[in-house]
Length: 310
Image (cartoon, rainbow, N blue to C red; front, top):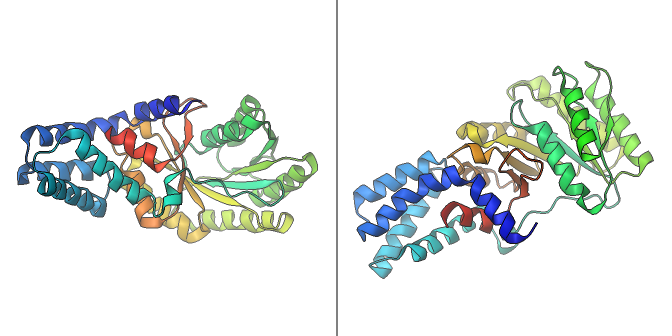
């Protein structure tokens, strides 16, 4: 897909958050001065978009400084400075301004462990990720390690068929670590480039779930040293601040290597991406901006900031 098409789809997916931010910014510029009432309105708007207190304060400082330095401000100039600030919040160095690459195994297969609570879109994210990875003809295998939720194995099988991925499964109620071990063996035997492991998504406060996933990590590592090469947490952006708590608990327990934010098209709280990135310094690797198979995109900070404010 061409760059313009990607950016347009991102803008469409972030429209609710963009619209929430646009109106007060336009009113600010039309008023030609950053008075306290307008700044208070903007503060509330940034917070309602779940950008977090620290990021909100930095954006307000940019606005104050812009008016102090330049007097009357044109909207494109103000947006340019706000975009630069957001990119700085999302990328700690110049290299981080582009999409964060997946961590690949020195030799295939690369093992991607996907975790998250039920309802975040975890299984469909796995399918969308496989479609991205399969674009250059690579072979992907799914491991159905969510043996707890009714119909989880069947759901993953349907997606595997749709995207042309292989599937390793056991019966409902089987030991997830045993499924993962068999999947690792199958990935080697079949010459798979990627092994993507689906996991159960029971409440993130349950200690037994975290221990179950840790066991999967240890088991796969025995068969494939260095695996899993990625441990990706899928978060539902519509849950706002609750996503922060989920990220905190999963990161403490599992050592996350990346985040995936889904359902950004269904919320005006897209600023949660910024708050999460700022707090955990775990890269957001993909974002979901729609329900279609092509609506999972690599996360590029500059594009994200532009789509929010342009």
